[in-house]
Structures are given as structure tokens and as C-alpha cells.
Amino acid sequence: MVSTPVVKEGMPYIIALAIVTAIVGFFHPLWAVLPGGLLLFVTYFFRNPQRSIPQECGIIVSPADGRVMSVTEFYEDQFIKGPARKVNIFLSVFDVHVNRIPVAGTIKYQQYTKGKFLPAWREDVSTENERHTLGIENDCMKVLVTQIAGLIARRIVSWVTVGNTLRQGERYGLIKFGSSTEVIVPAHVEITVKKGDTVRGGETVIGRMRQ
Image (cartoon, rainbow, N blue to C red; front, side, top):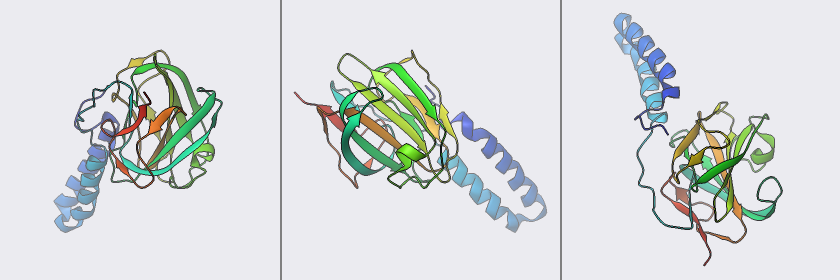
């Protein structure tokens, strides 16, 4: 969806910090270290690396970089409407924040929910925090993926909408400055990651259809 080295949503911050750094550096070179360092960090935060997407039938790839905070089972009544498994991934400010589609398919469901901005590592963020949910359907299954804003992340960006058909691993949005992402799959999907695992968006296989 977006293949530039840095996503466009980061450019206003980068340009503004570059101007501030240049002005401060002109008058006080030593003082330019602070805005210059911030400029480097913001450029790094909005990076948009290429990924090698696995080409295998029946797998679910991670929608985000980060650490698996939990793997739980529950009854999902929004979209899957049945027993389901949920993988919660925490993204620190040092992780890539571009999100990727976990399975190929068509977006059949979309909901943006206003809420709080609690720390993204808390267990109740999926019900309390501001979030954006997509329901993706293909011939094999239905999958929900949710971007959740955190204490610092107060802006969720999506580049897709209902009716769009997307490839597995395709970029579809980002969350600005620290957050979490959830994937919910039907209970018959085998989860291949556990709490504490580090995952990479579009590359790490987090689930697999049982044969």
C-alpha cells in the first residue's frame, strides 16, 4: 500500500524538526544536538522497511512488530461469532509501527471506537482504549485485527476501508508512538507463538490452519 522508506504521516514531524535543528544550529551549534537527536528518532520511528512475506497457504502472519503479551481464548461476537483465539502484541516506541494484513482477503467489517489512552501493556486496553478494528474474510476463515492506541500513541491511521481486497502482509495503516495490536482468529486455528515471543510484521507466522 505504501512502500516509501518513511511513511508520509511522519514527514510533517521530520520537516518541522529539520527546520528547528537548522535554525538552532545556525545560532548555537551545540544546542542543536537535542532537536537533531529528536529528528533522528522520529525518522527512525516512521521507518517503513520491506519484508519477505511467507507464501504458504493457511497461515496467519503477525500484523505488527513487537512482543506477544498474551494468547487467550474467548467467544467473539462481533465478526467471527464463535469460539476464538486472541493474540495481543505490544509495540514499544522502538518497534516499526506500520501494520500489515494478517491474511489475504476482503475487508467485510470496520469499526472505530473512541476510548481512553491507557498504557498499551495493560490487559484492559482492548476494551477501554481508542481502537480501530477490521474484519477480513477469505474462503477459509474470518479474522479480526485491531489497532489500539496507547498512552503516547493517540493517533491511529488506516489506509483501507470496507470492500478493499488485500494481500497477506500488505501494509494497511500505522499507530503513532507506542501502542498494541490484536489478532483474533477462529478457535480451530493453531497459534504458533506464545507470551514473550518477539514478532515481525508480515514475516512471523503466528497461526496456522489445522489440517
